[in-house]
Length: 366
Image (spheres, rainbow, N blue to C red):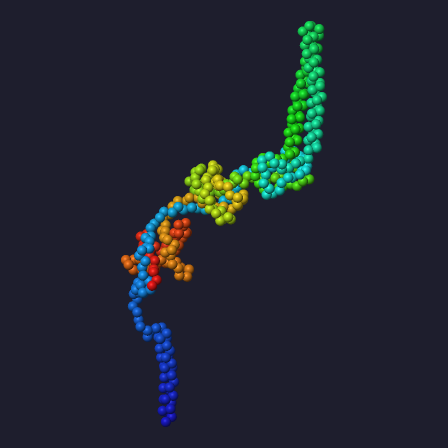
């Protein structure tokens, strides 16, 4: 009896782990799909599925063709004033008034700065008085010379006296000529006390205030002509050597969101040894929104590339992916594509996903 109980206990201890292991294996097999219907690893024909919900729009198919597009390399550039000037004094004098401020528009000949003129006017007056005195002495010396000339002809004076009269006359004449030149210089210096605009344009900045002493050669104002602007850029030598004066190029102006056409007017014939680039200057049309120093991009032609162009309305989207429907022998295939730059004529460049000659169709929903 005791032996039977021991055998039953032993069998129970063996069966329980076996049953638990069996159940665990069955659950793992079920989760792994061992009891599901198997499908052979072949491509599933999606044409029938698509044809149940849509049909081909054969009237609006488009054949993909390859097209040669120009490649442009953007080069950082800046807008510069073609006609600009720095106003500075040519004499040492105190500034009386400054008639303009930054941003003011001036015409050629307008008063910009008036310097103190007292000393300069005194020099002019002194030079005039000196001329008056010399003119009186010149008149007397001239009369003495003519009188000596007449007396010498009658042999009433010696040659030495005549030579002295002639020397006095020539000396006074030279002094009078020098005095007239000094007066001219004094008047010129006086004119430097009034600074006028050499060109019509816009005042950029002022670097002095009334009461300051203007040093000779020190800048006081800067102005430029806003009607004459251009774009300048340092272009690497491989591209710069392909450009010619008069060539048309495209300029992008991001700050005003515009793209304009320009013409190369100057190529500096010396490379920058640090960057191995050439300075290119391009003429642009007048634009009231442009100011010197603004950022621009010069699009330099850099060759051509073959690209595939398709209509933008043929592109469908799923999430962030782009795809098109391609008709392959009457079957519809979905092709995911990678798009490039959009064109101006509602076309878009395809970087990958299509080949030249593929027929793109649209689907008409039932």
